[in-house]
Image (tube, rainbow, N blue to C red; front, top):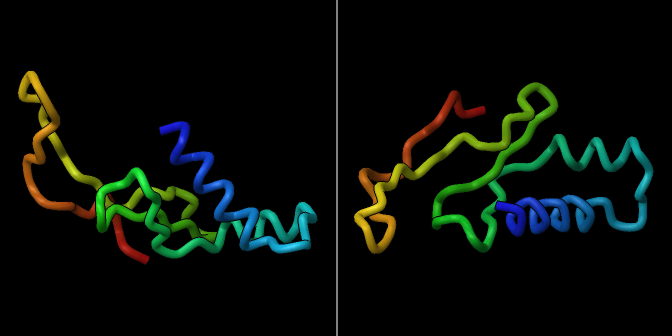
Amino acid sequence: MGYSIAEFFVHILKQCGDNLSRENLLQQATNVHEVQLSMFLSGVTLTVTPEDRNAFRKVQMSRYDGKRWVPIAGIVSAGAEP
């Protein structure tokens, strides 16, 4: 999870470009739409808006079978889509 958080922060910093002011950083961090991180399953993305800062809207439920994690069902919505 730590790697994914760092990757997400790098994404936000790239969106900021050369303007690293507090205002621009907050603007970029609260306007993220369906970012696919490298360690997330395909289709599990992050979205952040000024109105809803909960980045996780899609999840993949899995169960550990003693050797590996096995998906229980498909990707499901964890909340209202914007």
